[in-house]
Length: 485
Image 1 (tube, rainbow, N blue to C red):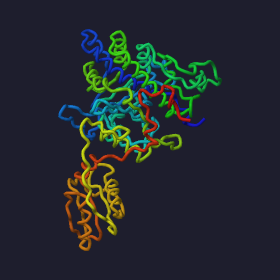
Image 2 (image 1 turned 135 degrees about the horizontal axis):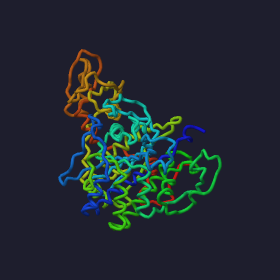
Image 3 (image 1 turned 120 degrees about the horizontal axis):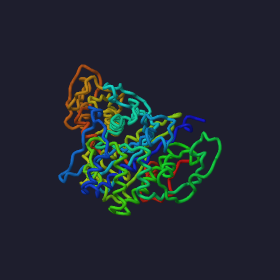
């Protein structure tokens, strides 16, 4: 059996917890003793482990509205009660195999959750360890290993947050971690969730080491699932679709859609929501910014008016790389660029304000002009973006690289004496660029922070339909898009 087939089943349902906990606490926040009880339930993690080099927070508009990025992490630690639900063979060390970045748009009418495959190969930045030391950079590392840094039962959510921020360029406002026991308790608190089981699931599917098919654990068709059965549904990988973890993520997104639909459909009913609030808050480990029922309530208010059709889920573009997964570029970069620009997956402006008019592009032709491009900043990818603009104007780009100095505030065009006219032509594409004659041959373009700001506000390229068609809205047919293969 290949590595992909041997992977232990993990769960993504804690996504669920994050959103539902928020909605639930809306009602419970003013309930006196209940409020104090909910506060006591919530654990927080140490924010000292967050990176010192984080993306800039998104500014608020005149009404105080801004996007919110919430990282939802599922821990599959078998410590305590979790071992009874998920099996204790893998030990108590906290591992994250369920991670979704929820982007709530400033208009408070749209939200999208992006699933990050656990086996994705990414760059993990320095992370704070239990002994107070910081780990070195880990290029091309397996994504879910970030949460395990330090080998503790509670995991390292700050390390996962650092990794997500480096990957996406988005500043994470809040992080939530939930475990097996919490998920089971929450699904029971809402008296089960109606989901679609694509085919009969047997004991042997839940435990491939069993050696035989066994009895049916989950029957094909629509089922109301809670507790252990709900956990089995979101954890099962074998016997459904292509037996992959990425395929299982689709069912987990469908489960979350169904749970959100149920909670929103029943409204703010104390009989339903107070038990759910209690189960949810007991299950959460959050950043200090969400460390009270009142703070969770504030987050919940940002979600309550979003229609189900405008809550979408998508998996970051991926492909298999042997037993691991590569994120597909530039598709994944364009996806996160869309979120940074507060555009929906369909390209709709969800910033809550009119879309900026694109700047007029000078009528410049670079035919016959060769330029070497240097990134004079610490912002990744700027040389490539500048090169794309040059190629679109018929310039020949002889190469892209990092400049010796990365503290350039202003873009510079360096040129030899024979290339003064061509340098002036090039400078027209970069308003405010400085022209510097040097004892060189040819032309160098060194992009600075002024270009970085321009590139950040430029409209991202439209996402390919092959990607957007994979998205799932929370009101989708419960039996659609439940697996690959």
